[in-house]
Length: 76
Image (cartoon, rainbow, N blue to C red; front, side, top):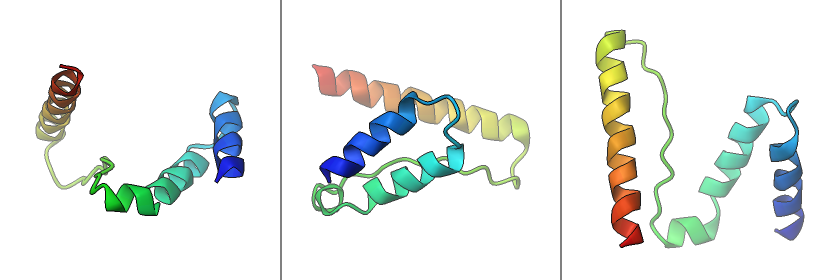
């Protein structure tokens, strides 16, 4: 686990790291037993291409606002 953590830190500091590799790391983190035991949900945005772009943008903004509100509430 420590090796994974160190490798991830290095990848995050490199400007040449491909987004696909970071997505892979997120998938690994999502499957960690600690995450599953804690019932944590790791949000993941996936464009549907089914909705009107304006509606999708509004939903994305709403989601960001909700996430920020939850973060603010957890700080209190």
